[in-house]
Amino acid sequence: MQRRHVLLAMAGLALTGCQTVPPPSLSVEQSGRFRITEVKVTGIENIRSWPAAAKAYAAQAGLTGEAALWAEREPGKRPKEVDAFFSARLTQLVEARARTDLAGIFKGAEPARLVFRVNALIVPSMAERVLVDNTADLNATIEVVEAATGKVVLSLADRPTFEMMLGGVAAPVVDTVAAMVVSLMASFAAWVSAR
Image 1 (cartoon, helix red, strand yellow):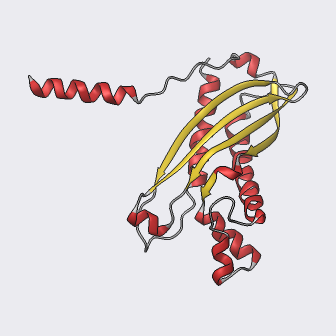
Image 2 (cartoon, helix red, strand yellow):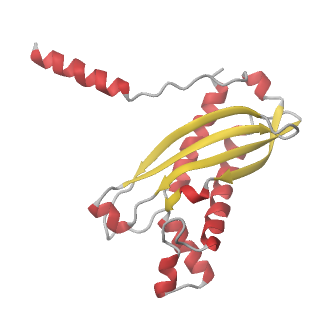
Image 3 (cartoon, one colour):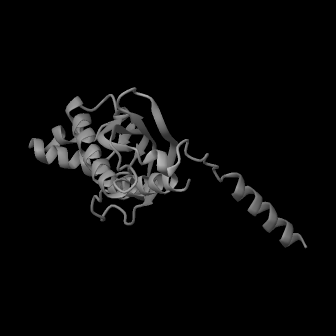
């Protein structure tokens, strides 16, 4: 009998963590009148760490030694060029997924902008994977904004996703951000299509 109560209590606790997502404000047919003509990524200052992109920036800029470490610093401590590189890389990932996941939904004539706002992005370094956590986390808000009026017509706020990173110090620096963007964009497409 006690076992059953413990199991019910654990199930109740698990369910309290579930998020209820409100349905989209537009039907699939209404969404279909728009066409995504621009992708804008904001919230780059909320990227705490992204080692693979920092390493790619350092290689592209020809940085080595101590100078290369500046690219991996936290927001406010890293050069603006690194944030610009992060923005361009993330925009490229989101644009690719928008073409793949959203083209069949937003196929109308009215131009709209897809805004991907980063609320948090934390990818642990190799040392952090061993000592602290081996999970990469991305939380974003995805919106569709009507180009003519600037009005937000669809908004899926604070969508979290995570990716387990396998391996410790000996593991290579793997860019898990692409997989997390795929997950979030697929989630957004499924949410818009659910109505």
